[in-house]
Length: 284
Image (cartoon, rainbow, N blue to C red; front, side):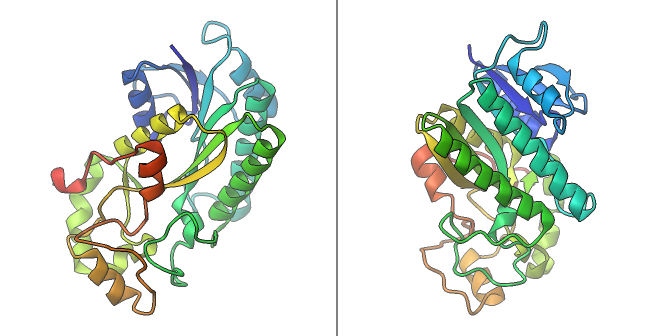
């Protein structure tokens, strides 16, 4: 049984990740400031902005563990505007550095963390270079939150350069949703501009957790970055028509049919075997 430390395991995505990993036979340690809603995993309160606490949390904690095999790093101020710009940037970069460096100090070579779709130019006030957006697009952070995520990816690239045996996977999650969030999705139909800020994308937390599990099992080495979204959009309207209406001057460079996502998940499908299993259409 592999032991996995999940930072931020009490959060919206974290809860789904803990459930997914436990259900697939992992032993999970939840490292968070906030206590969890349920006790499916052992919980230890850790301030990850403190490097000493972080390295200790990944090395050994009394009756919790004597070392972990992998780290899933989700802890952060979860979006722009939730704190002041400088606080968001400094907090999130410090936490990620502490987790990455502590994992290295502990000899952990399997690290998966939450990057963000915000790196793709959200809220897309400047149109994307093409549609669908994929991992090959140049990162374009427009907020302090997104800038911190770009710093995370840069740090990870250098850690992997320092250690060729290290695997670090950054998952650029779309807007995380739980089933209870889907009741408001029909209201988006009234105005396509309401959700144009991320090309009408979303990720069901359970599918996000699936992506995390598959990333942990991925046998490659080095840095890999994946966009993780659901296979469809939040809209009932045809995706190609939406893109042509709202981003009339942007080239559509791939076949898009029906309500297909405009946040490309082809790489995650190809390398991780990721395939979304949940849609808001089944919940409403």
